[in-house]
Length: 264
Image (cartoon, rainbow, N blue to C red; front, side):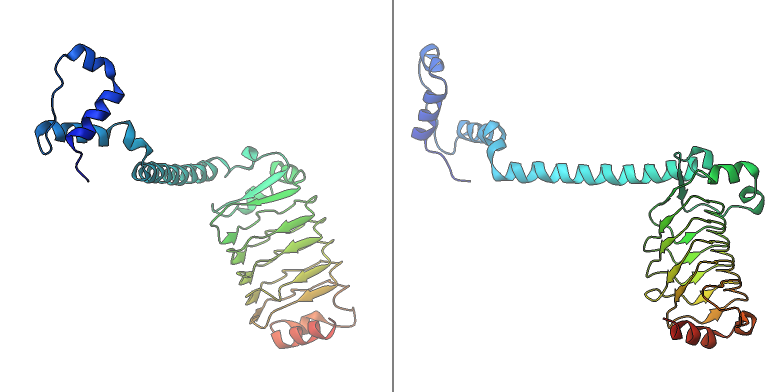
Protein backbone atom coordinates (compact mmCIF):
# COMPACT_ATOMS: atom_id res chain seq x y z
CA UNK A 1 0.00 0.00 0.00
CA UNK A 2 1.37 3.43 -0.91
CA UNK A 3 2.43 5.80 1.87
CA UNK A 4 0.68 9.10 2.33
CA UNK A 5 2.70 12.30 2.71
CA UNK A 6 2.16 14.56 5.69
CA UNK A 7 0.80 17.22 3.36
CA UNK A 8 -1.85 14.86 1.91
CA UNK A 9 -3.00 13.73 5.34
CA UNK A 10 -3.16 17.26 6.65
CA UNK A 11 -5.33 18.26 3.73
CA UNK A 12 -7.59 15.23 4.23
CA UNK A 13 -8.10 16.06 7.90
CA UNK A 14 -8.74 19.71 7.12
CA UNK A 15 -11.37 18.92 4.52
CA UNK A 16 -13.03 16.11 6.50
CA UNK A 17 -13.55 17.99 9.76
CA UNK A 18 -12.65 21.70 9.88
CA UNK A 19 -14.09 22.06 13.40
CA UNK A 20 -11.25 20.00 14.77
CA UNK A 21 -8.78 22.60 13.57
CA UNK A 22 -10.67 25.44 15.14
CA UNK A 23 -11.05 23.75 18.53
CA UNK A 24 -7.83 21.82 18.62
CA UNK A 25 -5.51 24.79 18.62
CA UNK A 26 -2.16 23.72 17.23
CA UNK A 27 -2.23 21.33 14.28
CA UNK A 28 -0.17 18.20 14.89
CA UNK A 29 2.19 17.35 12.07
CA UNK A 30 2.06 13.76 10.91
CA UNK A 31 5.45 12.46 9.85
CA UNK A 32 5.68 9.69 7.28
CA UNK A 33 6.58 6.37 8.90
CA UNK A 34 5.61 7.51 12.40
CA UNK A 35 3.05 5.76 14.66
CA UNK A 36 0.52 8.47 13.92
CA UNK A 37 0.88 7.88 10.20
CA UNK A 38 0.30 4.13 10.72
CA UNK A 39 -2.81 4.75 12.82
CA UNK A 40 -4.38 7.03 10.24
CA UNK A 41 -3.54 4.63 7.42
CA UNK A 42 -5.15 1.67 9.24
CA UNK A 43 -8.28 3.61 10.05
CA UNK A 44 -8.73 4.58 6.44
CA UNK A 45 -8.44 0.97 5.28
CA UNK A 46 -10.78 -0.49 7.88
CA UNK A 47 -13.34 2.29 7.75
CA UNK A 48 -16.11 3.26 5.37
CA UNK A 49 -13.70 3.61 2.46
CA UNK A 50 -13.05 -0.14 2.46
CA UNK A 51 -16.77 -0.85 1.90
CA UNK A 52 -16.48 0.79 -1.53
CA UNK A 53 -13.51 -1.27 -2.72
CA UNK A 54 -13.54 -4.27 -5.07
CA UNK A 55 -12.01 -6.42 -2.32
CA UNK A 56 -14.95 -5.73 -0.06
CA UNK A 57 -17.45 -6.47 -2.80
CA UNK A 58 -15.77 -9.79 -3.59
CA UNK A 59 -15.68 -10.69 0.09
CA UNK A 60 -19.34 -9.79 0.55
CA UNK A 61 -20.48 -11.75 -2.51
CA UNK A 62 -18.42 -14.74 -1.37
CA UNK A 63 -20.08 -14.75 2.04
CA UNK A 64 -23.56 -14.45 0.48
CA UNK A 65 -22.94 -17.30 -1.98
CA UNK A 66 -21.56 -19.67 0.63
CA UNK A 67 -24.36 -18.84 3.04
CA UNK A 68 -26.98 -19.36 0.32
CA UNK A 69 -25.55 -22.72 -0.76
CA UNK A 70 -25.35 -23.98 2.81
CA UNK A 71 -28.93 -22.90 3.43
CA UNK A 72 -30.21 -24.55 0.24
CA UNK A 73 -28.48 -27.83 1.04
CA UNK A 74 -29.85 -27.78 4.56
CA UNK A 75 -33.37 -27.11 3.32
CA UNK A 76 -33.07 -29.85 0.71
CA UNK A 77 -32.02 -32.41 3.32
CA UNK A 78 -34.71 -31.19 5.69
CA UNK A 79 -37.40 -31.43 3.02
CA UNK A 80 -36.48 -34.99 2.09
CA UNK A 81 -36.48 -36.03 5.73
CA UNK A 82 -39.93 -34.53 6.20
CA UNK A 83 -41.22 -36.21 3.06
CA UNK A 84 -39.77 -39.59 3.98
CA UNK A 85 -41.25 -39.34 7.46
CA UNK A 86 -44.69 -37.92 6.73
CA UNK A 87 -45.58 -39.21 3.29
CA UNK A 88 -45.10 -42.89 3.91
CA UNK A 89 -48.77 -42.83 4.85
CA UNK A 90 -50.97 -41.89 1.90
CA UNK A 91 -53.38 -39.97 4.14
CA UNK A 92 -50.72 -37.25 4.42
CA UNK A 93 -50.42 -36.76 0.66
CA UNK A 94 -52.08 -33.82 -1.10
CA UNK A 95 -55.57 -34.49 -2.40
CA UNK A 96 -55.55 -35.98 -5.89
CA UNK A 97 -51.86 -36.90 -5.82
CA UNK A 98 -49.82 -39.96 -5.05
CA UNK A 99 -46.18 -39.38 -4.13
CA UNK A 100 -43.61 -41.99 -5.12
CA UNK A 101 -40.64 -41.80 -2.76
CA UNK A 102 -37.69 -43.91 -1.71
CA UNK A 103 -39.48 -45.71 1.09
CA UNK A 104 -40.27 -49.41 1.36
CA UNK A 105 -42.68 -51.20 -0.96
CA UNK A 106 -46.31 -51.48 0.06
CA UNK A 107 -47.38 -54.85 1.36
CA UNK A 108 -50.20 -56.85 -0.21
CA UNK A 109 -52.51 -56.10 2.73
CA UNK A 110 -51.82 -52.36 2.55
CA UNK A 111 -52.38 -52.22 -1.20
CA UNK A 112 -55.64 -54.16 -1.07
CA UNK A 113 -57.16 -52.46 1.95
CA UNK A 114 -60.56 -50.84 1.35
CA UNK A 115 -59.25 -47.51 2.64
CA UNK A 116 -56.35 -47.55 0.22
CA UNK A 117 -58.52 -48.48 -2.75
CA UNK A 118 -60.97 -45.67 -2.03
CA UNK A 119 -58.12 -43.19 -1.66
CA UNK A 120 -56.53 -44.28 -4.94
CA UNK A 121 -59.72 -43.55 -6.86
CA UNK A 122 -59.08 -39.84 -6.20
CA UNK A 123 -55.56 -39.85 -7.63
CA UNK A 124 -55.07 -38.01 -10.92
CA UNK A 125 -51.38 -37.14 -10.64
CA UNK A 126 -48.17 -38.96 -9.71
CA UNK A 127 -45.28 -37.01 -8.14
CA UNK A 128 -41.83 -38.61 -8.12
CA UNK A 129 -39.33 -37.39 -5.56
CA UNK A 130 -35.70 -36.81 -6.46
CA UNK A 131 -32.96 -39.43 -6.22
CA UNK A 132 -35.13 -42.54 -6.34
CA UNK A 133 -34.33 -45.51 -8.57
CA UNK A 134 -37.47 -47.65 -8.26
CA UNK A 135 -41.22 -47.28 -8.50
CA UNK A 136 -42.21 -49.39 -5.52
CA UNK A 137 -44.49 -52.42 -5.47
CA UNK A 138 -48.19 -51.47 -5.66
CA UNK A 139 -47.23 -47.77 -5.70
CA UNK A 140 -50.11 -46.63 -7.92
CA UNK A 141 -52.31 -49.71 -8.04
CA UNK A 142 -56.06 -48.95 -8.30
CA UNK A 143 -55.49 -45.34 -9.45
CA UNK A 144 -58.40 -45.73 -11.84
CA UNK A 145 -58.60 -42.01 -12.77
CA UNK A 146 -54.91 -41.60 -13.56
CA UNK A 147 -54.50 -40.74 -17.26
CA UNK A 148 -50.88 -39.66 -17.83
CA UNK A 149 -47.63 -40.66 -16.11
CA UNK A 150 -44.15 -39.33 -16.81
CA UNK A 151 -41.51 -41.48 -15.09
CA UNK A 152 -38.36 -39.38 -14.55
CA UNK A 153 -34.80 -40.13 -15.55
CA UNK A 154 -32.83 -42.05 -12.92
CA UNK A 155 -35.47 -44.70 -12.25
CA UNK A 156 -34.19 -48.12 -13.28
CA UNK A 157 -37.04 -50.45 -12.29
CA UNK A 158 -40.81 -50.56 -12.00
CA UNK A 159 -41.98 -52.80 -9.17
CA UNK A 160 -44.60 -55.49 -8.78
CA UNK A 161 -48.08 -54.31 -9.84
CA UNK A 162 -46.96 -50.68 -9.61
CA UNK A 163 -49.60 -49.42 -12.04
CA UNK A 164 -51.92 -52.41 -12.08
CA UNK A 165 -55.60 -51.66 -12.69
CA UNK A 166 -55.01 -48.03 -13.63
CA UNK A 167 -57.88 -48.44 -16.05
CA UNK A 168 -57.82 -44.85 -17.41
CA UNK A 169 -54.07 -44.72 -18.03
CA UNK A 170 -53.53 -43.79 -21.70
CA UNK A 171 -50.04 -42.36 -21.86
CA UNK A 172 -46.85 -43.22 -20.04
CA UNK A 173 -43.32 -41.95 -20.68
CA UNK A 174 -40.38 -44.15 -19.73
CA UNK A 175 -36.86 -42.91 -18.90
CA UNK A 176 -33.72 -43.97 -20.75
CA UNK A 177 -32.38 -45.36 -17.45
CA UNK A 178 -35.11 -48.02 -17.16
CA UNK A 179 -33.80 -51.59 -17.14
CA UNK A 180 -36.67 -53.73 -15.84
CA UNK A 181 -40.47 -53.83 -15.68
CA UNK A 182 -41.76 -56.06 -12.91
CA UNK A 183 -44.51 -58.65 -12.76
CA UNK A 184 -48.07 -57.39 -13.28
CA UNK A 185 -46.74 -53.81 -13.52
CA UNK A 186 -49.40 -52.66 -16.00
CA UNK A 187 -51.89 -55.46 -15.57
CA UNK A 188 -55.42 -54.42 -16.59
CA UNK A 189 -54.42 -50.96 -17.82
CA UNK A 190 -57.27 -51.30 -20.29
CA UNK A 191 -56.96 -47.80 -21.83
CA UNK A 192 -53.23 -48.01 -22.60
CA UNK A 193 -52.76 -47.96 -26.39
CA UNK A 194 -49.05 -47.49 -26.92
CA UNK A 195 -45.84 -48.44 -25.09
CA UNK A 196 -42.50 -47.18 -26.39
CA UNK A 197 -39.43 -48.70 -24.76
CA UNK A 198 -37.16 -48.36 -27.77
CA UNK A 199 -35.01 -45.63 -26.22
CA UNK A 200 -34.65 -47.41 -22.85
CA UNK A 201 -32.20 -50.01 -21.53
CA UNK A 202 -34.92 -52.51 -20.60
CA UNK A 203 -33.58 -56.02 -20.24
CA UNK A 204 -36.56 -57.71 -18.61
CA UNK A 205 -40.35 -57.73 -18.93
CA UNK A 206 -41.81 -59.54 -15.95
CA UNK A 207 -44.56 -62.11 -15.97
CA UNK A 208 -48.00 -60.74 -16.90
CA UNK A 209 -46.55 -57.25 -17.11
CA UNK A 210 -49.10 -56.09 -19.72
CA UNK A 211 -51.77 -58.70 -19.23
CA UNK A 212 -55.31 -57.55 -20.07
CA UNK A 213 -54.14 -54.31 -21.67
CA UNK A 214 -57.00 -54.77 -24.07
CA UNK A 215 -56.47 -51.48 -25.97
CA UNK A 216 -52.72 -51.92 -26.49
CA UNK A 217 -51.97 -51.66 -30.23
CA UNK A 218 -48.31 -50.71 -30.40
CA UNK A 219 -45.37 -52.04 -28.42
CA UNK A 220 -41.77 -50.99 -29.16
CA UNK A 221 -38.99 -52.89 -27.43
CA UNK A 222 -35.20 -52.28 -27.45
CA UNK A 223 -32.40 -54.59 -28.55
CA UNK A 224 -31.33 -54.80 -24.90
CA UNK A 225 -34.35 -57.01 -24.04
CA UNK A 226 -33.09 -60.37 -22.77
CA UNK A 227 -35.71 -61.84 -20.44
CA UNK A 228 -39.42 -62.31 -21.01
CA UNK A 229 -41.75 -63.60 -18.32
CA UNK A 230 -44.77 -65.79 -18.94
CA UNK A 231 -47.96 -64.33 -20.41
CA UNK A 232 -46.55 -60.81 -20.75
CA UNK A 233 -49.16 -59.96 -23.39
CA UNK A 234 -51.89 -62.34 -22.32
CA UNK A 235 -55.31 -61.10 -23.53
CA UNK A 236 -53.84 -58.10 -25.35
CA UNK A 237 -56.21 -58.69 -28.25
CA UNK A 238 -55.45 -55.50 -30.16
CA UNK A 239 -51.73 -56.23 -30.12
CA UNK A 240 -51.82 -59.98 -30.60
CA UNK A 241 -54.56 -61.46 -32.81
CA UNK A 242 -56.56 -64.29 -31.32
CA UNK A 243 -55.13 -66.84 -33.76
CA UNK A 244 -51.69 -66.39 -32.17
CA UNK A 245 -51.15 -68.39 -29.01
CA UNK A 246 -49.07 -66.08 -26.81
CA UNK A 247 -48.11 -69.04 -24.66
CA UNK A 248 -45.82 -70.05 -27.49
CA UNK A 249 -43.93 -66.84 -26.82
CA UNK A 250 -43.11 -67.62 -23.21
CA UNK A 251 -39.40 -66.97 -22.68
CA UNK A 252 -38.83 -66.70 -26.45
CA UNK A 253 -37.55 -63.17 -26.69
CA UNK A 254 -36.51 -63.34 -30.33
CA UNK A 255 -39.97 -64.47 -31.44
CA UNK A 256 -41.65 -61.65 -29.53
CA UNK A 257 -39.28 -58.99 -30.82
CA UNK A 258 -39.61 -60.24 -34.38
CA UNK A 259 -43.40 -60.15 -34.24
CA UNK A 260 -43.63 -56.72 -32.60
CA UNK A 261 -41.32 -55.21 -35.19
CA UNK A 262 -43.23 -56.82 -38.01
CA UNK A 263 -46.39 -54.91 -37.12
CA UNK A 264 -44.80 -51.49 -36.61
